Length: 337
Image 1 (cartoon, one colour):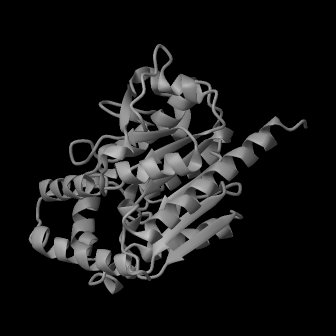
Image 2: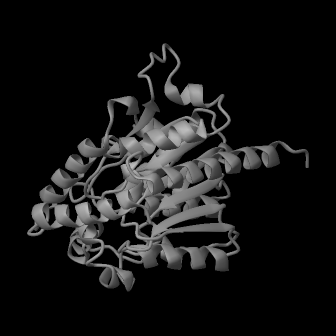
């Protein structure tokens, strides 16, 4: 455990006590997400081109149930140099690439945006060499469950409509976004159009909040306390069943082996057991699961690349995993039967 990682753990705990100690409103969580995003962002991280997910992006037969029209959701295509894409839309350019990463940001379904996770997104895109589209899904409580899941389905369908085969789409996300990627992957696997792979960083997989690490690691991971998790889950679920697999992939059923999955977890993360339990669930379903445990790391430590060496190491590993999986899945799909 490096010095900067120890410093990060102390700093995030101090931030939680000073800024979020009395947080009782979702507005407090949104302000905190924006502050952290501004702190870790760098002008070198580039920017985004927006693609709105309107009704034309929605496959009414996709992800098991009828979907909403996507509302205000969009895809934010990462662009390192803010290049002019010209007449070709980012999705159309991606159709000719080796593969595409579809990324879902964290924030407990109530906060966050691609901009708050720009450091992580930029690192994944650079290290993988793949186009990356970040889902900017609708937030609760204004848009409760299953809005975020519906938006993720619409995003995947939009990539397919642009000519990107499922075998060339890799899913990634952190926190709630990691859970969303896993929920989407499980639904797509049941539909027979599984993604190439999934990389989830400290995923929130159980909105029923039954993981023991939520309490065991509460002092070491104060930024995302059990109380704030309850607040977020209540706002997002709005009375829905917390074990619905569209919200909690830990309870998903698998009729076939799930896609190759990488799970990265910090030993001090309050969601540590969410990740460990998910890894076991996927393995029981016949999945190829790689589990990377980072000693002393709190929740969301990957955001702090390049300041923290372990964060950069984690994102380099995830980028290699995703690219290798996309290339392998594409080769299998192209092989003669």
